Length: 320
Image (cartoon, rainbow, N blue to C red):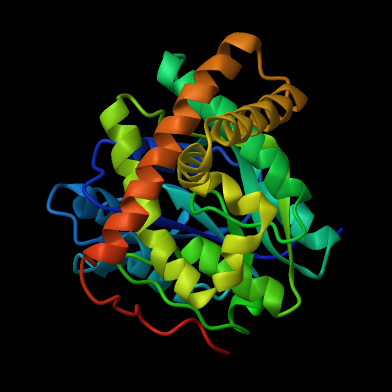
């Protein structure tokens, strides 16, 4: 089997402490040959100097930008890819030495595969991280079996031919990974999940971290729905609007609200158990799910009522 050529796109903003570890992980990859595109998003610390002075074995290019934000910077990195497959790596990720080879094999096995998402686990064993991991496992089960699966930022991989056949934006409040997922499927490409080896990202340390992250998710959802209104109607996506549905049920009748609550928790529990999540983590997952969805709903409402600013487009999508 001939593996496709591959480039890793890694976005960095003031990540001087993480740069050595990311380089070490990439140097340890079993894949024989790949290019690394480091996109520095206007760092003000030593990140650029570390990358400029890199003399290791990686085929590394540095793209230096003013600070434009994660999504526009990621798109600029994707534009620089000439290889057949682009893999997105975030600064807080860790990954197994066989990960890039596994990604390349999946694209070699299926010529219609346009996008791939990896199973994500959290580092650490704090209660909040265990609950968040339990929710991730449930969502991963849904994504793999959905009729319209979706990618999510860290660890996603894209066939360059596929992204050059579509147009997508990458502004400050754009959920560019979900937008791109929708557009690839509309263009006839497939999206699939990679169960093993998983990637690991930093765990949410505090409730404040969790609330802030999902509040931004809610704000971005407003712009996603404007581009893809049917996203709201798919059963696999209803969970993110759970608090609103539950509150509507309680507004109608106490029993209606209780039925919604029990149905959602029952579904969530079943999905987590299917992913072999232990009972303690399952219960923690119930709490984290409520925090995440409440923050997301709050962000959606705030963006509808008090839009942060007009949604700017990023640079044009890659074109042939």
